[in-house]
Image (cartoon, rainbow, N blue to C red; front, side, top):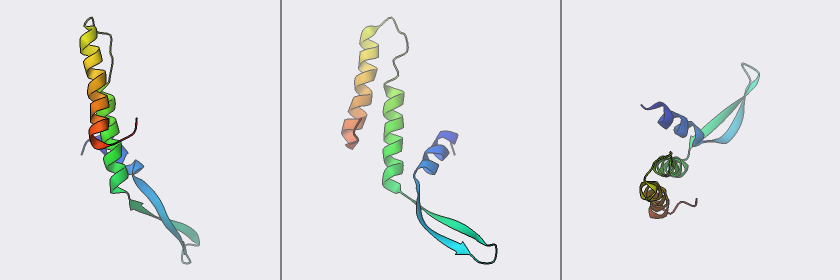
Length: 80
């Protein structure tokens, strides 16, 4: 799996609850995977990549990339 996808998947984990492990005398945190958050993170990442405005001589190309990123966010209903 792509390292960036792994990072996004980790960000989509949210603390669900904690328990106490009496044997080891420590608190154990239990996480749940938020599929919606993961999808949103992927959409944001795609839009970010599309919107990269590296120095190009062609200003129309740069503007087109910017709007492509905005279109990706709009298509999936993700706020910028």
